[in-house]
Each structure stands twice: as structure tokens, then as C-alpha cells.
Length: 99
Image (spheres, rainbow, N blue to C red):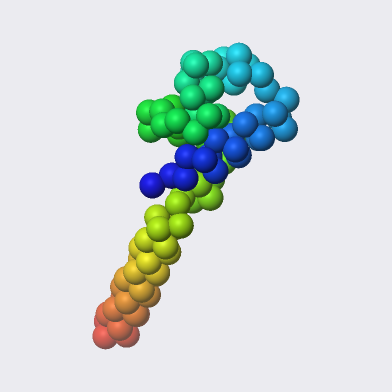
């Protein structure tokens, strides 16, 4: 689901931009230096560690999705908006009837 190559590039770039060594990032996140290195080399690490790293480095999850996953996310968000719009419309009709 995540584009690991993109995530690796962005994570390393962001870490360096923030002037964080792997040791400092390890202290902040609790993610071991070896796991940070794995991530920065495009290897998968646990979801929890990935989340902690992305949070610490201000990386938005949706920016790291593969093209296919990003398309799926767009469809999900569109459907959610459609459902919310329908629910709002139904609530308005109920209020009109109650008045």
C-alpha cells in the first residue's frame, strides 16, 4: 500500500532537513536505529514503527500511498462525502417535518 521507495526517500530527506541523526530520531520515536535504517533503505518495518517515524518527521500517510492505493483512497473519500451529503439532506427533511 505504501510506496516504500518514496517513503524511504522522504523520510531520509526530512530527517536530514530537521538535522536529526538516527540516534536522535531513535530517542524521539523509540524506533531503533536499525529499524530507521531499514525504512530509509526502502524495507518494510512494523506499522507502529512506520507511524511513529511518519509522525515525528511530519510525513502525511496519504502522500506515501502507491498510485493504486491513492486512487482507492480517493474513491473512499468521495463515497464518504456522498454519504454525509445524503445524511445531511435526510436530517434537513426531518427538521422540516418536525416544524
